[in-house]
Image: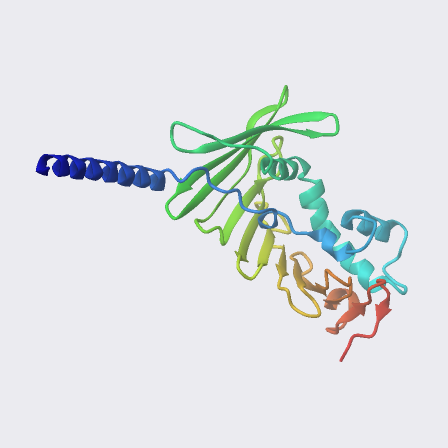
Length: 281
C-alpha cells in the first residue's frame, strides 16, 4: 500500500511539475505583439464631415475650388481648408505606407528565429502592387515596429516608418520617411490613449530637417466631451499662428478660432448644416 501511495504521489508531483513548466513556458512566449489600433496612426479627418456624403479631403478641395472662404459656410470651409493640408500630407502624400498599415490587420504574423514577428502581404493601389513587411519585436517594457515596403523594379525593403509603444499600448510614437526617392524624416506621430475611457490623442509634427515648417503640428484629441468631442490645435510654424477647431462627431456642429484669419480671438461657429451661426455665450 505504501509503495502504491508513494508511486501515486510521485506521479502527481511529476504531472504538477510538467504543468508548471508548461505554464512558465507559455508565460515566456506570449505570442505576437498586437498591432496598435488605427487611431494611433491616422487622425480621423473624416469625422468633421459626419453624416456627409463626401470625404474630408474632397470637401476641403471643393471648398477651395468652388466656395470662397467667405459667405454663409465660411467658418466650416476654413476649418476644412486648414485641416485638409495635413490630410493631403499624410493620407494622400503617404498613400502607400498608410495603405500598408491598414492592410496589416488582415494578416497573420510568423515568428522569426530571433523571436521577432513578421506580417508579410501585398498592397494594391491603383495598378501598382507593393510588398509589405511589418516587423514587431518585444523590447524592454514595450514593442518596436518597422514597416518595410518594396516595389518590384524600383526599391526593396525601404524602411518607410518605425515606432515604439509601451507594453499596454497606451502611448507611443511613429517616425515616417518622405519616400524611397527622398528618404528624409518627414513626420513624427505621438499618440496616447485611455483604453477604459475610450479616449485618445494623436499629434503629427513636421520634422523635415531644416524645413521651414519643422516644428509645425496638428494636435488632435477625442475627448467624449459635450458639446464637442473632437479638439484640434493646428500650429503653422511659418506664420507662427494657431488654428483651434472643436466639433461634434455626432451633430457636425463646431467652432474655429484663428487670429491670423479672422483678425480676432473669438470663436466662429457653424451648425449641423455647416451654416455660420452665432456662438453660444
